[in-house]
Length: 182
Image 1 (cartoon, rainbow, N blue to C red):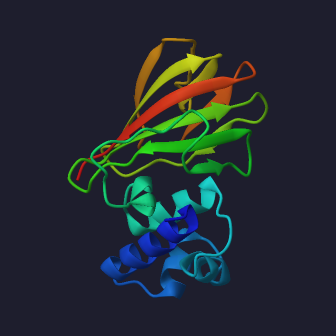
Image 2: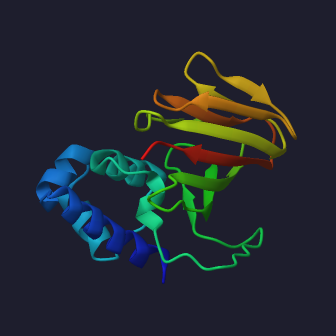
């Protein structure tokens, strides 16, 4: 299934579960109703920001928008997987593993280039992010508590408040694990 088809099906499913109309979800997410309609039709190329806004408005983990039946074995090569880009920073995020509804744990490989930082609004209560730099250097973390981390460094932080990711060297790769309560 193509990423746009996964996203379309997931938005429709989660909107129905929440009992929201197209207009109500668009208003909650702060996006145009026409944009939401296009996404539900499997058209368009949503940014990370748009998908985060929808996940927040639906009160579901970001990965629910990519939920598909889980295979028993998964191999994703370094140049494969559904890639999302940021509108405001040189960030590419590849979803490596989405959690089941019972686990609420997602794993991403983020390719970040120097330039503008990628700012993320807070996630649902109980959310924690775990970051490990695989290559390069990055500044990550909650506003006012950002830390500079390098290859092999691990940094965990409460992700309920605004936080950011910023590359300090070209070719920075960060493994990011997001977890939240059910």
